[in-house]
Length: 308
Image 1: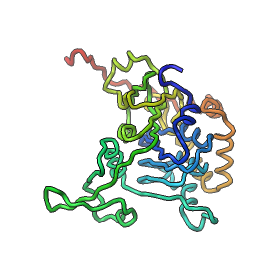
Image 2: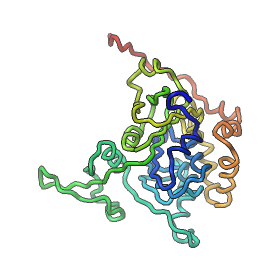
Image 3: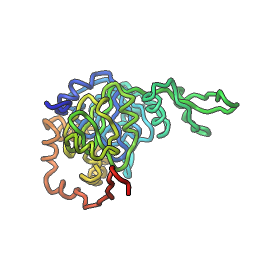
Image 4: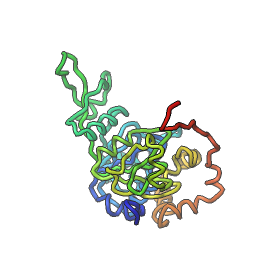
């Protein structure tokens, strides 16, 4: 082990504990599927799963029985449909005597505001939102508050401080200085709000690479507990510069997710019966992986010693 570098198995075993609040963040891009699968593989239980846009990974994790509660904004299979494993844990007709999944719903901005309040150690975050919305009726934690400077009434949300934040990124050094480019969500806020942070990266680089391009560093190593090097760890989502979104996967998941037996069969084949992400990538096959490789898209360059 060098610095904070460890395996996914060891990171999840050491840092994700039964009953934790776990946030796997990344907005359509850089979604930590490999981390979610390892949590399922290790059969963690009673987790509170938080995510700004729960999608297929949380559908799979909830089908794997890891969660008792979901804190979220919009949820769905992006561009395809609903999350049917989650629906079966919420809708009374599907529960068959099992306890329902607890849900706590916000808007996208409400989730960002909660992470921001948690990251900045504030007791709440006001936002100019939720007017003419039914969300405050559905979620009593969204509360009106009078401005101390005027008669204006706003809404506010409480801080969200996950026990663990898991962030996928392009690269990091052994100390955990983590660099991201492309579409960002609220990874930085979630990481700073969390008690423990796992970063999962496509590539481990020397500190000199990070120092040569410091503005790409979104998460500093001082808040990172573990660095996991897991190429293709965000599949079927995408990593800018490494691989494209696997649209076929999202389309295929919809009919699978509609049948509980098919979901459990998928989890056995692709999660429980595989030892790690490397075996998952091998099972996907070289041809499918090659089909997701992006073409060149060079960016401009900058000399940090002189802007001229």
